[in-house]
Image 1 (cartoon, one colour):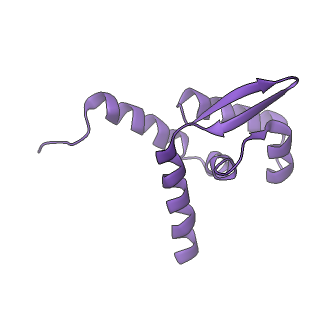
Image 2 (image 1 turned 90 degrees about the vertical axis):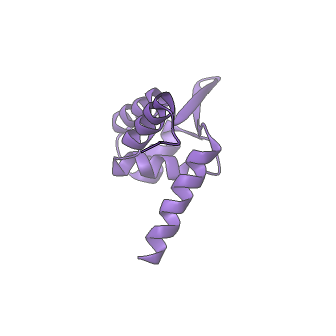
Image 3 (image 1 turned 45 degrees about the horizontal axis):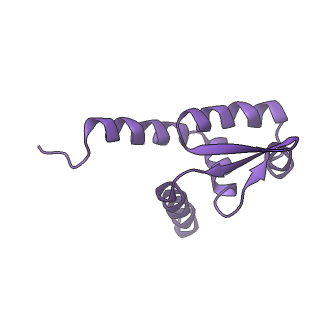
Length: 98
C-alpha cells in the first residue's frame, strides 16, 4: 500500500488529532474558530476552572493546534491552521446530523 501522507506529516496530523481527542479541548477549539479569545472568557463560557482551561491549552499549543499572543496583561489564543478550522466545523456539522 502506498500512502499519500509522508511519515513526518502523519506524525504532525496524529499529534493534532490526539490533542483534539478530549471533549473539552474540542470545545475550546470550536470556540476559537471565528475569534481569538483569552483564558478568562473561555472559563466563563465553558464553566470550568482557569487551571483546567490552561492545562488543556498547553496540550493544544504543544500539538500546534493553537497559538497565543500576549497583549498587555492578556494572552489571546487562536487556531493555527485553516485545515483545523475546517475539520472542527465538519465535526460540528456532523453533530447536527445525528
